[in-house]
Image (cartoon, rainbow over all chains, first blue to last red; front, side, top):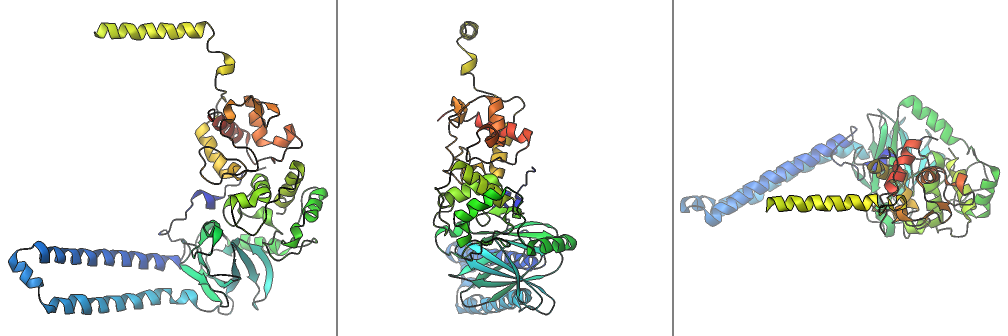
Length: 317
Length: 130
C-alpha cells in the first residue's frame, strides 16, 4: 500500500496571490494594481491632511480652498475609478463568456455542503458524475458551468481563477486553466450555512494523455476490489438510498456519487485525506467531523462491519 | 562563595547517581522510546494520513474525532486499545495494521510505511501525560 499525500490539504489555505494559469494571472495583477494604487492615494491623502493640520502657514494656504476639493476630491477619483473599472472588466471579461464550440465543459453544482460535478459531452449532455473534485487537462481553458441546488455558493480556486457565485435558478460560467499538472485547492467563498467553512473543492490537472485515461476510466462502472460481503453491508446499511455506485444497486441521488470514491484525493468535500482510516471515521461520525452536514453518523455498525464498508469504498478506484 | 556553589552541584550529582545506582529509575518507569523514531516527523505523518478523523490527538487542532479514543496520555497507558501490552513493537505494528492484531477492531489498516509507523509510534510515546 502506498502513502498518498493529499497535497491539497498540506498547503491549506491555498495561496491567493500565486497564479498557476492565465485566468488567475490577470486577477492577481488587478489585485496588486488596486492594492498599490490604494496605498499611494492613502499616502497622498494622509500627507495632505498632515499639512492641513500641522504644516507651516504658507503650506496650509496652498491646500485650502475649493480648488483642491474639485480636483482631488472629484475629478481625480472619477478618472481613476473609471479607468480601473474599464481595466478590471476588460481583463476579466472573457472569463465568464458562455462556452464556445469545442470547449470542454464541466457542470459544478453547489449543494449544502459539497459539490456535484458532472462532465458534459460535446452537446452539453451529462456524460458521468463525480463529486468534490474537478479533473482538467493542462494547457487549455475549461468552462465550469456553475449552478446551485439550494442557496448561494461561490467557487474559488485561487491559483486558477477568481471567484464566481453559484446562484439558484441561474447558470454562471467561469473558465479555469492550469499550466502545470498538480492539485489545486478551492473553497466555497460565499457563506452557505452550517459547515460552509468545511466545503472545500479539489482541482486535479493532468497532462492531456493522462486526463484522457482518467476520463475513460471514470466514465465506466465501479470496479470493486474487496470482498463481496463488504458491498453487502454497504447495501444493507441503506447507503444506496443517497449514494450512487454505478454498476451496483446503489442509485441514490441525494449525496455524492461514490462510483470511484477510492480514487479521490480527499473525503468530506476537501477536508480529510482519503484512506480506509478516514473513511471509517467519516462513516461512523460524519456529524462529529463536519457538524450539520446532511450525512448522518452511523453508530450502528460493529468494528468489523465499519472496517469492511471502509475497505469496500476505499477499493472503488 | 563560588567554591561552595560548585561543591553543592557536585553533591547533587553524586546523589542523583546514587539514586540511579540503587534502582530508583526502573525500566518500567522510563518513557517508552522507539529506536530511530522521529516524533516530529510522526506528527506530520499523523496529520497527513488523518488519524484525527477518529482520534483526538494532542498537537492536532482539527479534527478531533470521537470514533476511536483520545490519544492524550496514550504513551503512559499500560494497554493499547485496552487489549494489547503497550510495548513499542506492538505499537508500531498496531498503528500500521490494527486488524492483524485485533481482528474485530474498527480501526482499519493505515497506509503507513514501516518507517512512518515508527515515527508515529515515537510521537505517540511523547504523549505520556493526560
